[in-house]
Image (cartoon, rainbow, N blue to C red):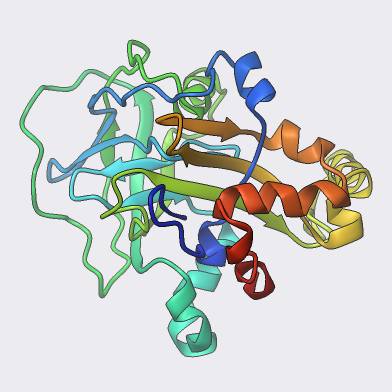
Length: 268
């Protein structure tokens, strides 16, 4: 969202939110540990990829390239949105991260060397060229974060194929010393028309019992820097599901750190 010392409104595309007690249940506490710079994937030309330490929600781990791009699993509808953004939704361009193409990552456990990271991105901004990457073993990573938890789940997942396509985006947290990130899930329905019946029922129940039904959105994950205490405060999706409509404004006031900034909420 913004630096902890100068919070600003975040682009809606990057909004995400959640609870400290829930993070404690995950063993995260209230302060994310420094990310161990351990390479977990490399592209075919050697560009290194790491876990993205500012991830606060989602079902799949986000990656960060050595040059600084953010890589997230490519869902068909989301990829279609970014590919058609310039021609179909140009008015949204100021509010979303730069779309830099796609890349294919090999998630199959494999050993890798300790070669120095490449400093030049192998992703052309004018194309969506897919390139393979091979992953290093990463179970020894010490950074206890959402991205690491999701990555460890990915390691034991029964993959039909270990090749995973990622959308490559600009990192909106770059340039901030203590970036704050808020995840908001928009809409009163959060399953696709082609979702399996069990998944549709599960998503419908989550919407019906949360602020998704009453307000049209819910908070799903948050990383906020508490300047007074010199630490991050973390919230997760389970906290967000417990919030009632009356709880939302106080939660967002905390994000903006000042009641005088609540005018920002009108833009959201």
